[in-house]
Length: 407
Image (cartoon, rainbow, N blue to C red; front, top):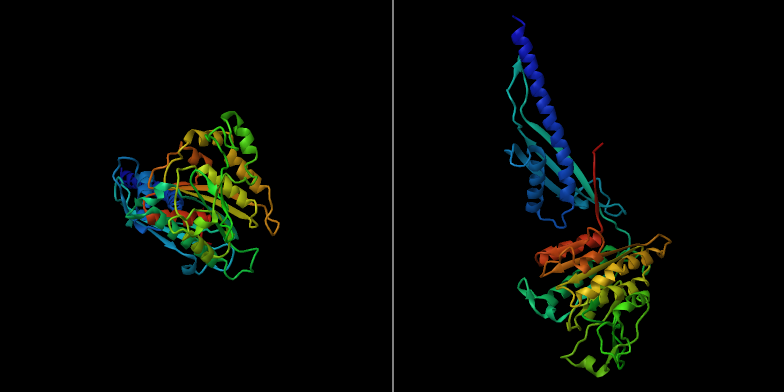
């Protein structure tokens, strides 16, 4: 009888210790999952990171509908320059996310046995490193230049916003490889504007400029490039071939201040070239993103770098959505990736090709043909101009995150 209270105390001590150990283990697992989840965010918004981390932690630890017992959920992002473990000059630069959580889980008793107390609080920390691929990249912006780009979004004209974005991305890519040897090993950027057609590169003074039709469906019967639905496979079989002129624009119009047709800007290492050429362009026509994607694939075939990324920027659905759906079902996007990845880069490395899509001023549904053309996990809808910029930067970085355990 004298030993019974002691035995009961030991039993309660063991039960509460097990409860704390279980809570600490759950907290650790949840922390790892939360820091990896936050690493997928395509922006650097501190409030959003913390809100997402707390949501993950509370859902995993306390369960839906349970009372949250976490007192602290802090997450910080350290850039490569802020982290002494990171060498910004190497090919393995990274950003590090550091998550610290703590709280007091519910317990049956606060036991004291033989003067020893069980602390009711638990804590854990987790880290994830988001590695940035610093290899040389060929980036191809497939830019929507349909008539709707003259309209406003987020209090500014969409075409103005697009020019500024592309100029900034070109400058960022140039700065990233500024110190490398000219030619091979430098980032390049190309811009392929599209509406219902694409155009050749800007001609020399006095020469005509040609509009190009990659998949010329729906034209009048007398058109030279008339196609029918049952000839889709034939049209896709030649998609990597340069197309002849569909319509020519006289050279005199190039100097007309009211007529600035858009045109393809081939790969360049110079941000100034991109800026100068974009200033001369004007949106026109309806929307056919597949025209721009195929034209970008033709340009990507000329690339030299091991990373070749096609980024589609779209402000609206394709006018002929059924045609694009048929093209996706025929596998034209998969073919583009496969053909590009069968090439070698300038230094003999295998090519890694990808297609990403960012929509703005409209919500791109996952069932949309353009969304299904992109790589898995590389379809985004921008909520505002800053969000659009962050998502594009993340695509260019081509980052990946992994848990990190400090030795």
